[in-house]
Amino acid sequence: MVIDSHEHLILPTENQIELMDQSKIDKAILFTTTPHPEQAHSLQELKQQISMLNSVLNGNINAKEKKRLYENNIKDLTTAMNYYPDRFLGFGNIPLGMTSFDIELWIDKQICRNHLMGLGEFTPSTIAQIQQIGDIMKIVCSNRIYPLWIHTFLPVTKEMIFSLVDLCKKFPTVPIIFGHLGGTNWMELIELAKTVPNIYLDLSAQFTSIATKMALLELPERCLFSSDAPYGDPFLYRQMIEYLSPSKTITNLVLGENIMELLTKLNLL
Image 1 (cartoon, rainbow, N blue to C red):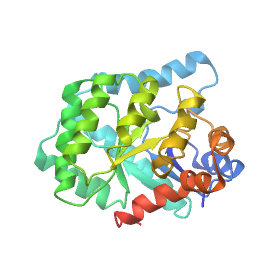
Image 2 (spheres, helix red, strand yellow):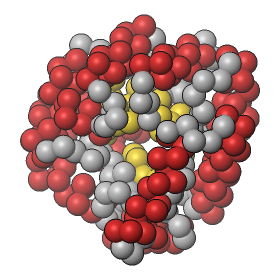
Image 3 (tube, rainbow, N blue to C red):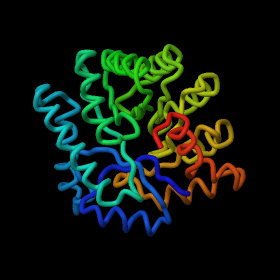
Image 4 (cartoon, helix red, strand yellow):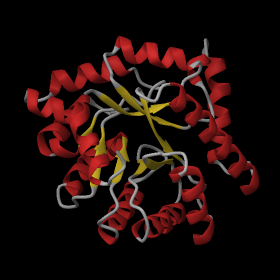
Protein backbone atom coordinates (compact mmCIF):
# COMPACT_ATOMS: atom_id res chain seq x y z
CA MET A 1 0.00 0.00 0.00
CA VAL A 2 1.32 3.43 -0.98
CA ILE A 3 0.62 6.14 1.60
CA ASP A 4 1.40 9.80 1.14
CA SER A 5 2.07 10.64 4.77
CA HIS A 6 1.67 14.41 4.47
CA GLU A 7 -0.85 16.19 2.28
CA HIS A 8 -2.83 19.30 3.11
CA LEU A 9 -6.54 19.39 2.45
CA ILE A 10 -7.25 20.32 -1.17
CA LEU A 11 -10.64 21.68 -2.23
CA PRO A 12 -12.72 20.39 -3.81
CA THR A 13 -11.88 17.01 -2.33
CA GLU A 14 -12.55 15.29 -5.64
CA ASN A 15 -9.49 17.06 -7.05
CA GLN A 16 -7.37 15.59 -4.27
CA ILE A 17 -8.67 12.10 -5.01
CA GLU A 18 -7.89 12.61 -8.70
CA LEU A 19 -4.35 13.73 -7.83
CA MET A 20 -3.87 10.62 -5.69
CA ASP A 21 -5.23 8.34 -8.42
CA GLN A 22 -2.89 9.85 -11.01
CA SER A 23 0.03 9.13 -8.66
CA LYS A 24 -1.24 5.63 -7.74
CA ILE A 25 -1.49 6.55 -4.06
CA ASP A 26 -3.82 4.36 -2.00
CA LYS A 27 -4.16 6.59 1.05
CA ALA A 28 -3.11 10.05 2.17
CA ILE A 29 -2.70 11.45 5.65
CA LEU A 30 -4.45 14.81 5.56
CA PHE A 31 -3.35 17.86 7.50
CA THR A 32 -5.39 20.98 8.10
CA THR A 33 -4.78 24.16 6.14
CA THR A 34 -5.72 27.81 6.25
CA PRO A 35 -4.66 28.85 2.72
CA HIS A 36 -5.58 26.95 -0.41
CA PRO A 37 -2.71 27.56 -2.85
CA GLU A 38 -4.18 25.01 -5.26
CA GLN A 39 -6.81 27.65 -6.06
CA ALA A 40 -4.22 30.24 -7.12
CA HIS A 41 -3.80 30.86 -10.85
CA SER A 42 -1.13 33.55 -10.66
CA LEU A 43 1.76 34.56 -8.42
CA GLN A 44 -0.33 37.41 -7.02
CA GLU A 45 -3.16 35.04 -6.11
CA LEU A 46 -0.66 32.67 -4.48
CA LYS A 47 0.78 35.54 -2.43
CA GLN A 48 -2.72 36.37 -1.23
CA GLN A 49 -3.26 32.78 -0.11
CA ILE A 50 0.11 32.58 1.66
CA SER A 51 -0.56 35.89 3.43
CA MET A 52 -3.43 34.15 5.25
CA LEU A 53 -1.01 31.56 6.59
CA ASN A 54 1.57 34.18 7.56
CA SER A 55 -1.09 36.10 9.45
CA VAL A 56 -1.70 33.07 11.66
CA LEU A 57 1.98 32.16 12.06
CA ASN A 58 2.96 35.73 12.91
CA GLY A 59 0.39 35.97 15.68
CA ASN A 60 -1.83 38.52 13.98
CA ILE A 61 -4.94 36.87 15.40
CA ASN A 62 -5.71 36.45 19.10
CA ALA A 63 -5.84 33.13 20.95
CA LYS A 64 -9.63 32.89 20.79
CA GLU A 65 -9.70 33.50 17.04
CA LYS A 66 -6.89 30.98 16.51
CA LYS A 67 -8.79 28.28 18.41
CA ARG A 68 -11.90 28.92 16.33
CA LEU A 69 -9.85 28.82 13.12
CA TYR A 70 -8.19 25.52 14.09
CA GLU A 71 -11.54 24.01 15.05
CA ASN A 72 -13.02 24.96 11.68
CA ASN A 73 -9.98 23.59 9.85
CA ILE A 74 -10.29 20.27 11.67
CA LYS A 75 -14.00 20.19 10.81
CA ASP A 76 -13.17 20.64 7.11
CA LEU A 77 -10.57 17.88 7.33
CA THR A 78 -12.88 15.38 9.05
CA THR A 79 -15.62 16.12 6.51
CA ALA A 80 -13.27 14.98 3.74
CA MET A 81 -12.25 11.94 5.79
CA ASN A 82 -15.88 10.95 6.30
CA TYR A 83 -16.64 11.22 2.58
CA TYR A 84 -13.64 9.06 1.66
CA PRO A 85 -12.85 6.88 4.71
CA ASP A 86 -10.93 4.37 2.60
CA ARG A 87 -8.61 7.05 1.18
CA PHE A 88 -7.88 9.47 4.02
CA LEU A 89 -6.40 9.44 7.51
CA GLY A 90 -5.78 12.66 9.40
CA PHE A 91 -3.61 14.67 11.78
CA GLY A 92 -5.01 17.63 13.72
CA ASN A 93 -3.27 20.75 14.90
CA ILE A 94 -3.17 22.24 18.41
CA PRO A 95 -2.71 25.95 19.17
CA LEU A 96 0.58 26.48 20.98
CA GLY A 97 0.68 28.20 24.36
CA MET A 98 -2.36 26.60 25.98
CA THR A 99 -2.46 25.36 29.58
CA SER A 100 -1.99 21.67 30.33
CA PHE A 101 -5.70 21.36 31.08
CA ASP A 102 -6.68 22.95 27.77
CA ILE A 103 -4.20 20.78 25.86
CA GLU A 104 -5.73 17.62 27.34
CA LEU A 105 -9.24 18.89 26.58
CA TRP A 106 -8.29 19.77 23.00
CA ILE A 107 -6.71 16.38 22.35
CA ASP A 108 -9.78 14.60 23.69
CA LYS A 109 -12.33 16.70 21.80
CA GLN A 110 -10.54 17.54 18.54
CA ILE A 111 -8.15 14.63 18.05
CA CYS A 112 -9.44 11.53 19.82
CA ARG A 113 -13.15 12.00 19.13
CA ASN A 114 -12.45 12.73 15.47
CA HIS A 115 -10.35 9.56 15.18
CA LEU A 116 -7.26 11.47 14.07
CA MET A 117 -3.89 9.73 14.03
CA GLY A 118 -1.51 12.43 15.20
CA LEU A 119 -0.80 16.05 16.08
CA GLY A 120 0.46 18.79 13.81
CA GLU A 121 1.62 20.39 11.64
CA PHE A 122 3.48 22.61 14.10
CA THR A 123 5.53 25.48 12.66
CA PRO A 124 7.60 26.94 15.52
CA SER A 125 9.42 30.21 14.95
CA THR A 126 11.07 30.67 18.37
CA ILE A 127 12.74 28.58 21.06
CA ALA A 128 9.81 29.50 23.31
CA GLN A 129 7.45 27.77 20.88
CA ILE A 130 9.72 24.70 20.87
CA GLN A 131 9.24 24.62 24.63
CA GLN A 132 5.47 24.83 24.13
CA ILE A 133 5.71 21.79 21.86
CA GLY A 134 7.50 20.14 24.77
CA ASP A 135 4.47 20.88 26.95
CA ILE A 136 2.31 18.99 24.45
CA MET A 137 4.76 16.08 24.37
CA LYS A 138 4.61 15.89 28.16
CA ILE A 139 0.81 15.60 28.05
CA VAL A 140 0.93 13.02 25.25
CA CYS A 141 3.57 11.01 27.11
CA SER A 142 1.33 10.61 30.15
CA ASN A 143 -1.86 9.85 28.20
CA ARG A 144 -2.47 8.32 24.78
CA ILE A 145 0.63 8.44 22.60
CA TYR A 146 0.28 10.33 19.32
CA PRO A 147 3.05 11.17 16.86
CA LEU A 148 3.80 14.85 16.37
CA TRP A 149 4.58 16.36 12.95
CA ILE A 150 6.86 19.40 13.08
CA HIS A 151 7.84 21.67 10.19
CA THR A 152 11.65 21.95 10.27
CA PHE A 153 12.42 24.05 7.21
CA LEU A 154 12.58 27.85 7.58
CA PRO A 155 11.79 29.62 9.92
CA VAL A 156 13.11 26.73 12.04
CA THR A 157 16.83 27.19 12.71
CA LYS A 158 19.60 24.69 13.42
CA GLU A 159 19.48 25.67 17.10
CA MET A 160 15.74 24.96 17.18
CA ILE A 161 16.29 21.55 15.56
CA PHE A 162 18.83 20.72 18.27
CA SER A 163 16.23 21.74 20.88
CA LEU A 164 13.64 19.48 19.25
CA VAL A 165 16.10 16.59 19.32
CA ASP A 166 16.63 17.23 23.03
CA LEU A 167 12.86 16.95 23.52
CA CYS A 168 12.88 13.65 21.65
CA LYS A 169 15.47 12.36 24.10
CA LYS A 170 13.44 13.66 27.04
CA PHE A 171 10.23 11.97 25.82
CA PRO A 172 11.48 8.80 24.08
CA THR A 173 8.03 7.20 23.76
CA VAL A 174 6.66 10.07 21.66
CA PRO A 175 7.44 9.75 17.92
CA ILE A 176 8.38 13.02 16.26
CA ILE A 177 8.23 13.42 12.50
CA PHE A 178 10.70 16.08 11.36
CA GLY A 179 8.97 17.67 8.40
CA HIS A 180 11.00 18.42 5.28
CA LEU A 181 14.09 16.64 6.67
CA GLY A 182 15.36 19.74 8.46
CA GLY A 183 15.59 21.87 5.33
CA THR A 184 19.15 23.11 4.86
CA ASN A 185 20.12 21.34 8.10
CA TRP A 186 19.45 17.89 6.67
CA MET A 187 22.95 16.50 7.25
CA GLU A 188 22.92 17.35 10.94
CA LEU A 189 19.41 15.97 11.33
CA ILE A 190 20.22 12.62 9.71
CA GLU A 191 23.27 12.22 11.95
CA LEU A 192 21.28 13.06 15.08
CA ALA A 193 18.35 10.84 14.11
CA LYS A 194 20.61 7.79 13.89
CA THR A 195 21.08 7.94 17.67
CA VAL A 196 17.51 8.96 18.63
CA PRO A 197 15.05 6.18 17.72
CA ASN A 198 11.82 8.19 18.04
CA ILE A 199 12.82 10.60 15.25
CA TYR A 200 11.17 10.01 11.86
CA LEU A 201 12.21 11.78 8.67
CA ASP A 202 9.64 13.31 6.35
CA LEU A 203 10.91 13.48 2.77
CA SER A 204 8.79 16.29 1.34
CA ALA A 205 10.03 19.72 0.19
CA GLN A 206 13.63 18.59 0.02
CA PHE A 207 16.40 21.16 -0.17
CA THR A 208 18.29 18.87 -2.59
CA SER A 209 17.78 15.36 -3.95
CA ILE A 210 21.02 14.17 -2.36
CA ALA A 211 19.39 14.79 1.03
CA THR A 212 16.71 12.26 0.13
CA LYS A 213 19.33 9.83 -1.14
CA MET A 214 21.36 10.02 2.09
CA ALA A 215 18.27 9.62 4.27
CA LEU A 216 17.27 6.50 2.32
CA LEU A 217 20.76 5.07 2.73
CA GLU A 218 21.23 5.90 6.41
CA LEU A 219 17.75 5.47 7.95
CA PRO A 220 15.44 3.67 5.50
CA GLU A 221 13.28 2.25 8.30
CA ARG A 222 12.37 5.76 9.54
CA CYS A 223 11.91 7.65 6.28
CA LEU A 224 8.37 8.61 5.25
CA PHE A 225 7.18 9.37 1.72
CA SER A 226 5.15 12.54 1.50
CA SER A 227 4.46 15.28 -1.00
CA ASP A 228 3.22 18.22 1.10
CA ALA A 229 0.53 18.63 -1.57
CA PRO A 230 -0.59 21.07 -2.88
CA TYR A 231 2.88 22.60 -2.37
CA GLY A 232 4.49 19.49 -3.84
CA ASP A 233 3.32 17.05 -6.48
CA PRO A 234 2.75 13.48 -5.20
CA PHE A 235 3.70 11.94 -8.54
CA LEU A 236 7.09 13.66 -8.61
CA TYR A 237 7.94 12.87 -4.99
CA ARG A 238 7.02 9.24 -5.46
CA GLN A 239 9.19 9.11 -8.58
CA MET A 240 12.12 10.62 -6.71
CA ILE A 241 11.98 7.96 -3.99
CA GLU A 242 11.67 5.15 -6.52
CA TYR A 243 14.59 6.54 -8.52
CA LEU A 244 16.92 7.18 -5.56
CA SER A 245 16.07 4.16 -3.42
CA PRO A 246 18.86 1.56 -3.06
CA SER A 247 16.41 -1.36 -3.30
CA LYS A 248 12.80 -2.36 -3.86
CA THR A 249 12.59 -3.38 -0.20
CA ILE A 250 13.55 0.12 0.93
CA THR A 251 11.17 1.66 -1.60
CA ASN A 252 8.28 -0.31 -0.10
CA LEU A 253 9.28 0.67 3.43
CA VAL A 254 9.35 4.36 2.63
CA LEU A 255 6.27 4.48 0.38
CA GLY A 256 3.96 3.10 3.05
CA GLU A 257 5.21 0.32 5.29
CA ASN A 258 7.04 2.61 7.73
CA ILE A 259 4.09 4.88 8.47
CA MET A 260 1.74 1.89 8.72
CA GLU A 261 4.06 0.22 11.21
CA LEU A 262 4.32 3.41 13.29
CA LEU A 263 0.56 3.96 13.50
CA THR A 264 -0.11 0.27 14.15
CA LYS A 265 2.51 0.18 16.91
CA LEU A 266 0.70 3.07 18.63
CA ASN A 267 -2.68 1.28 18.28
CA LEU A 268 -3.97 4.10 16.10
CA LEU A 269 -5.02 1.78 13.25
